Figure 1 (spheres, helix red, strand yellow):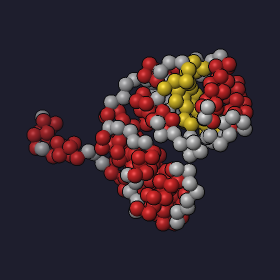
Figure 2 (cartoon, helix red, strand yellow):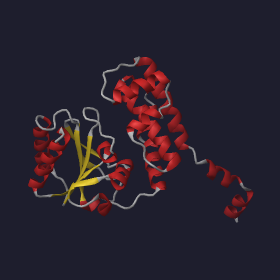
Figure 3 (tube, helix red, strand yellow):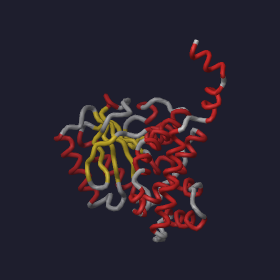
Figure 4 (cartoon, one colour):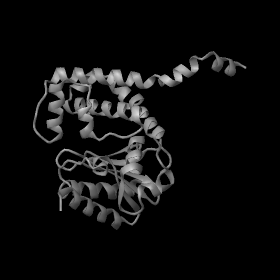
Amino acid sequence: MPDHAVALAEFGAGLRALGWVSDLLVAGSLATGDYLPGVSDLDLVAVTDGPVGDARQAELTALHRRLDATTAAGLDLGCAYVCAATLGDAGALHPTWTHGQLVRRIVSGVTRAELVLHGYATFGRRPRELLPAMTGDDVRDAARAELVGYWTWAARRPWIFLDPMMADLGLTSMARGRYALRTGHLLTKSLAVEQAAAPGWLVGQLRARRRGEAVTSPRLRTAWIAWRDTRRTTRAAHRPPRWLTRFLSYPGVILAASG
């Protein structure tokens, strides 16, 4: 059994034993079939029967720290804990274990799309039984929200792209965002590498890193390319679609609105 499967099984058993987690759902690369051992994170969402207060957070922290030091070591196992009563609230903040600490985050629209379109349950109900259906327009809205939210914030801080991991994430995220806006479908990270707005030599290096190879790119040049692409893509996401611009330009629309 692969390491991530062993870790998921032990993690699921640990959550069941708590007695207040009803469902454990798989999102991210593992859900879309793009999981690469040693490269991909494990992105999970757990549904709880009530709020996750201090006592429950302490239980979760103990469970995650034990797994991170043993079965899940090096797997970047992350999980958002969503109270069933707030599952439909896209703006609600939930306790989320990520990179060795418990923080509060939303379950993004893209994660929700991954769950509904590709996700599955390791125990409990299927994602489609818990979340509303996702149309192509819903996927576009989710992608636009990330571009005009976090990534617009990032575009205003070019220095953060000096972090090689951030530069890679920016290039692949922009490719995924453009694809979602254009098609209404999700794009895997591996396919996003092939559509990155970068020179061929950098795409080749992104591809190698996606395979887990220790390949280094020129730091300053890569940061510039990633930041420029992020700035360009986020600016475009703020603009209305061309069809809407053309529609609003017709005199009849203006007359109807003013009448």
